[in-house]
Length: 215
Image (cartoon, rainbow, N blue to C red):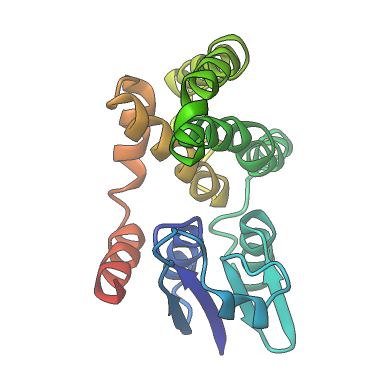
């Protein structure tokens, strides 16, 4: 049986959702975050980096959301329900699966890190730390993040899903898009409409219900 090591409030919800889309039998090992919000150390017993999601299938221990999603689609999507239908959609599928963590999430993580610098800096150095982080965010992070948000708003104004019909690329993209909306007060209508659309899928409801029961 498949086993998902699922960390609360993390990217591993993507895999829980995908498993529900595929209608597979699986077991969930739920892990709570430490007070510091770090992952618990027992995850390192499963994978050296101690990060979630981790999916175990027989002797295979799989990490990284995009890798796990692709593995599930290739191994268990027997009806090809979540496979892109043509060459153009396949290219978009590959692109968005990598874009989510390779281009978009680093900017969101950098923003989060910059916002926390002041809290972790000695009191006397906080004015200087705020000045430095404000400059980094204003001159580097925010302009680039805004370019990505405008790019996504434009794309979603012309496409219902990221790779033709609904696919696991949409599950992959859901996490950073949700983070954008949460941090901007749902400012972007095309992103919000897209998130609303995919969140009405029955498998999404089932996955969310399971996560809430585990929390």
